Length: 398
Image 1: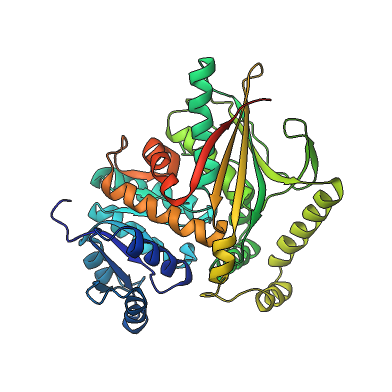
Image 2: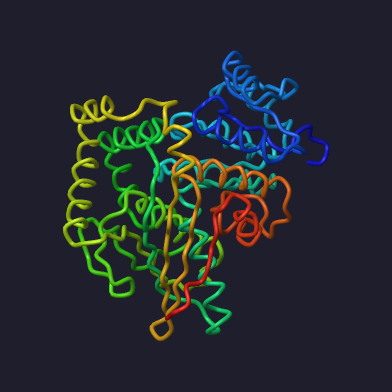
């Protein structure tokens, strides 16, 4: 792909998250050969003006126009897509990248879409050499890479891998984006109408390849529980629904190095039993509300519209902490992930940008196919993330 005009084309640059990715690339990577893309030239020209890059190329492509998408992806090594809901807009672009041998990364957390496109598009990508990687933002890089990092450290210390890892969301500060709300509502609307989609969302092994036998993990935590390893009450974590599936898929795609019986669970650390109960009750009420049309309509009015999100001060003052504890039954190891800026947008946009740069510039050990962040980029992405203030470290026992 050395003959292609661009290293990266950012598709969806005029959306809320797309603008943040564009701002980061423009400021931090002035040597990058890149372009911005979408369907509305006027909006893209506005973004180009805000970036003060009058020569930045613009590519026009509608998400359902195969000819335009083909012309776009042939020009670049890698597509970064922020255009969601991906189940609604993402399949033609993903398939075009697979067919044309163009690498691709996105921010989807839509398990039903990922499960649906895998069997259809993965063989095409394997043939062309295109590396296609979902979930390259807050869902699911901290979860997926923390498990990868922990297992590396565990094997170096104890000679084998942990067979049970618990991911725990710690403190965080940030805001909510309309794009995320739109994706959540779209998934809920689909699930309310289609029992098979509802089953996929609830299945711990929904993202397992068809040729790999599922293990014994159970559905994600919905109530409260006391965690001895963290000496804390825990409640359900909204992103666990996708993160746990991605972690299990990483193990499967790598050939089950952690074992066929590897278990992973994820929840939210809470400072008291009362807060854990409130967390469980609040999340349960919101999720239940999204499955019914009248309450879904009310929630849409209360939450941000697509294209809206937290202001700059909220993003820059945000942060997150994510923890993981692993054991083989005898040994124990804990790691911590920290990120500057709010997790959903400030940190996510930079993680996505680094995933795109990794796919475009780094030498990776996997060939074409649909991958997870850890299975595709592993060490290379771990080395890149400190550039955007996302750090992984071992927590030594006192």
